[in-house]
Amino acid sequence: QVQLQQSGPGLVKPSETLFLTCTVSGGSVSRGRYYWNWIRQPPGKGLEWIGYTDDSGSTNYNPSLKSRVTISVDTSKNQFSLNLNSVTTADTAVYYCARRDSYSGTYYFDRWGQGTLVIVSS
Amino acid sequence: SSELSQDPAVSVALGQTVRITCQGDILRSSYASWYQQKPGQAPLLVMYSKDSRPSGIPDRFSGSASGDTASLTITGAQAGDEADYYCCSRDNSGDHLRVLFGGGTSLTVL
Image (cartoon, rainbow over all chains, first blue to last red; front, side):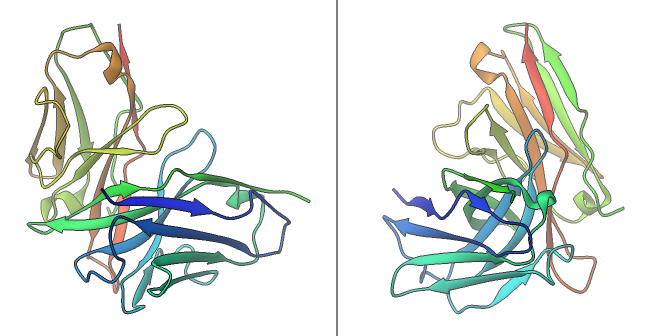
């Protein structure tokens, strides 16, 4: 059973960089079928897709965050990471990592990390 | 538009049937996936590719799609089904692929 385990600080100062890591167990990030995503959820609000990487390091980001986001993969550690720079209080959210699969052209997130509440505050 | 719209809240009597809908132009070319989220928990995939249920999801959950609307139906709603439900689909209309979520529907089981 594939599991995603998130790690990283829960408090970041404004203008600094948010960094989270998602470690995959029970499976490999190198299996080319899947895409490795970050999704966030501000308190009391809905889900927002941030972006993904594949096992080769090819990425795609939400246009609204593209200028500040980097998602990377480390196949040797079986993990992928999120960098979000120049954070503001609007970036306060629960951040999730998730595995994306596809079937008949439908994309779906079938494995999720436990979520990390990141608060942006001085 | 390249957005997904959901009713903010829906209620259903225990044991009755409820349909949660998701509307958007992108659903004319891509099926939706559906997620259940209970307070303090990560979302859980409950439906994908219109009407496919992941292993472990009860068969009282079903999915359908027509035109620009996707639906998640719960037949015989249980107290444990009370949660927020989100639809999700992909948008290929721009230069790059985007993934969009609906705003979510809060389901109350009375």
